[in-house]
Amino acid sequence: MTSDNDIYRWYADVIVYRGFGPLIACLGAVGGILSLFVFRRKSLRKKSCSIYFFYLALADLLCMICWLVHFVLPTYNIHILTLSNFFCKIFVFAMYFAFDLANYILTVCSIDRAISVLCPIRSRKFCRERTAYTITFILVIIHTILNSHLLYGFVVLSARTISTPSIRICHHRVDSETYRNFFSIYDSYVDVIKTNAIPFIIMFVCNIIIIIRVCRSKSSMNFNGKNRCRKAKKRVEKDRQLTLMLLGSAIAFLVLTLPTETCASELCPLRRCKLSPLTLASETTMNQRTSVRNNQSTQMNMSPFPIKMNDDNDSLT
Image (cartoon, rainbow, N blue to C red; front, top):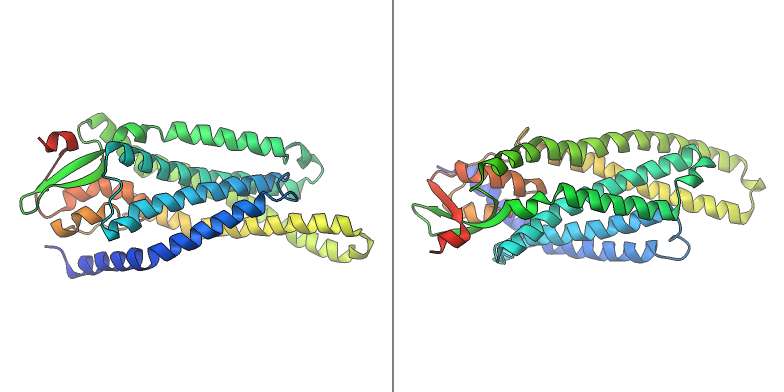
């Protein structure tokens, strides 16, 4: 039987997503839109770091929309994911794509700032407007290709139990053992390494370099402040503000994202509770971002009742 703790945990999810989800979504949307306007200002748009921040804001807005669809709207009985296979595929793909793209844009931005503070003169060859656009375009292409299998692998399925009617869920394919095995490996090992471990290592090294150089440059700027012209000091101050903004974003990523992603994977399951038929329909869309994929691969065999899953088109006949 389902324990009381599991039921309380489910109700806590409902309260958090239903109560605070819309507020978080509104604040995130407003912050993202303001970021777009700020980083398209004439004084910033030609800086490579500002270009990365602009596209980072776009990726974060897409993440926010997908988070809203996956986790918040289902608490209001709005299930966009299960309207059709198209919505299921698009939103799952968009969730992975936006999250991966945001991580790697932040990673490239860290590299950009590290090179800028480490080699101010030589960095002009790399830290350019054209280079930033090119790298961002390459990242979009790469992550589109890497996550394109989700457009094939996720469909709307019908799940039946002995005691409950059929429910519709957005789930990876069960009719292809090859893809099921591939997704299990990709989701538990490849995605954690690709999405979190690699960016974590790169950002950690770059942040150490940036922090050391910023501390030194601050003391140097105070010492030589009287000899600097006003225009040069203003330019240095803008670069310093961008660097500090990057440090805040990168540190937030390092502190918050890696533990969540790692614990939500099969290497360290975040939630291994059994699901009652009452909670089964909502649970697929009420975990953390990675639990969408992790829980979809485990929730069916965790239910205390026998469950049969079929392709939605077959289940309706």
